[in-house]
Length: 550
Image (cartoon, rainbow, N blue to C red; front, side, top):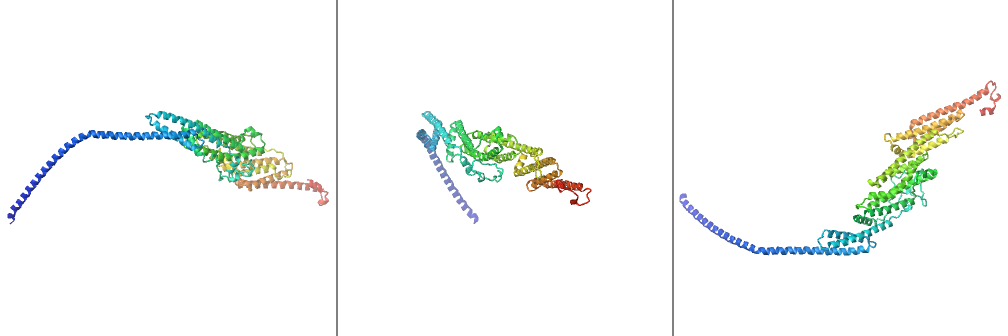
């Protein structure tokens, strides 16, 4: 059965294969027909494209023309708007800056924008004419702005009255009402104590609302090439205001000869005032000047450092001249404390001076301050050494008849005790020229030498007594006074317990010597008068008056 069915299957497959071949032939015929049709379309499209090409070219030309027209219209609008801006700005410029300075400066900026526009579009027919006209307007505006800057600087560069400055001081430094001659360096109220955290309020030298306008004007002047005019106007106005403010305060320029001619009381008062003035000048006036200089020339391509250095130069020289004159004047022991006060205030103000006079242009100011500080330190050290020598060589003929404390002793002890109010300053002083040794050990060494110089002088003065008992009594009283004073003062920490114990032994030795010599005379008198006497004292004929005299 399987063999019989096979031919039938083969016939079926043959029929299907024949049908498939017929289908493929028909499909191929269709494909060839479509290819022929598409080929004819391609030919027609090529012909159409060739026919359309001139139209496309014309369309592109029209589109380009439209774009050019749009650009031209926009350019024309831009030019017209620039002309409109120029007309409005010109009207403002011609009115001048007095009515509305801010609008005037805005108009100047508009004109600068117009110059930039026409400078980059010089192909416009009227560009050159417009540029010339606008540049002429800008030149006129620059002159008017310069005049306005000068007027503003004059109006707002008035000297500050002392009362306004005093109001900016910490309460502890403000003078009493009606007393402008303050003693900022009074010995009774050591100036630097309690001032480390004192608050100083910088005075308003120029109203804050004016500063932005001045900044805008300075910017315009510098951009217009008028740096020198701007520089001179600012420098001269502010320098004058600063100098007059200091003069009103009481600052004056003095030479070494002027200082040398003064009586001590007058000089001491002037030194106290100078210390006060230095704080006001540096912490208030100079700090204020630096602040407004930075604000007015903020963002301006301008050498404000040189300008600030020049405007403050005369005032700084005047301030430092007095300190310099005192440092160079004849030395004397009483000047040591005021020299320390002056040195102290210069050290106190050093950070502010470094900050205010920062930068290379102000190098000379910083060096002048540093030089004055060192000169005061050197003079103070030399005065210290002079005092030590003066104590040892004191040749006063004053004799204390009863052997009590000599005036020199009380003077030197009070001097040394007062020096210890300046311990921190003295340590800085010693370190000014020598960092190799401990400042405290240097202070101890100097104090020890002064005390030894006093003791040496007292030894010499004790020999002026004809009575040996008074010699020992004098030494005992004076050295005891030294020991007691040291024990009750800060000198104890510097000189140490060894010094105290050693000098207490010296006091005891002199006390023993005094008792020995004094009683020896009495015993001698009694023995001389009592020699050969067989009765008691009352019957020996010894005169009470004679014993008393001896």
